[in-house]
Image 1: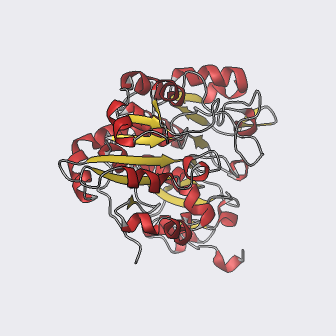
Image 2 (image 1 turned 90 degrees about the vertical axis):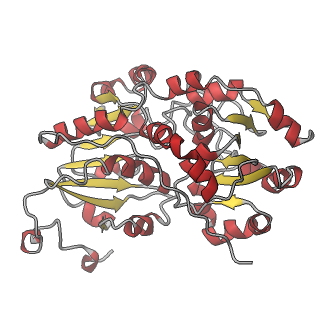
Image 3 (image 1 turned 30 degrees about the vertical axis):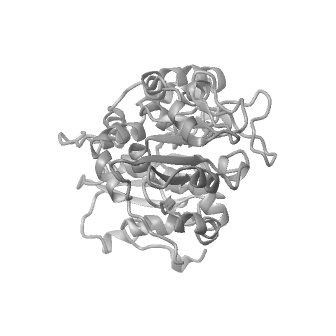
Length: 404
């Protein structure tokens, strides 16, 4: 990092010479991965139109931050170098992950980037399974406190039951906790009326069923555990009755590279696999799906909350926190049997009590951004504007096929 890479506006000691609008409060979005960045944008788009605010972003150190800077810049965001961001004081900072947050100089708001805080912290061993007695990830002192004090001015949680976890694991942070619900779930619900449009955009016919295969990252995810699962599913399902889509966690693409992942799946794509670019909003596929074959990742939990039929692939047990949406799905979903005909399994998949999963996922349905926005303005010391937009549907997806 060199001094010439720093930006001279809209922050810095000489910024007043160059900016057109002066006296704006500066809000820093701290991006880590594509997933956490998408969660940030879900919230930031509800404050960025305020003429009193200047929004800037930075990309924090993270093993999976490849592609995040380019993604932000394609949205038109102003991205500061990390070294400059940690040497400037901001009026507010917002993050949906944890790396480097102790270096940020601003009142900080932290929120989850997945389906609540439903997983125990992974062990450092390669299989990624939780260590015995591991804490609930994201609600632990290792990530939320320093020297017995909270690192954030506000910790946004999805549900009251997460307050009990904080009370047990990190009581010093409890006074900063705010139950807001889940902004991702709210956008999924807002997107339900567009289900038909999503299906048309990805080429699913009126008489076809869409089967989405969702995999989280790491060796415990379906894509790592069963490398030929996608091709197996495609070969078993008649193309006139089914379409198959793959939703791979962006960390899969980040660790292996977009070219490599598409190369691994090239034959499947040429046979009709629907494969979104990792920067595309994955939620449209969950709304469009009839069935989801998943693992312990957040996609499976959200699918269960929307009432999609779920088959869990072979995988580890004990990853989900008891009582979490991930746990409710894991204990009530069907189990994929690779030795049985798949069409029959899809037809016989039991229904999940999606109301119970949704109730475990969010304690404030359809109110997340409203509640969080109110807290952001309190921390900024500004009156909240009267205008406010509700959760919006996610964009209609675009499909970019690999060349033959």
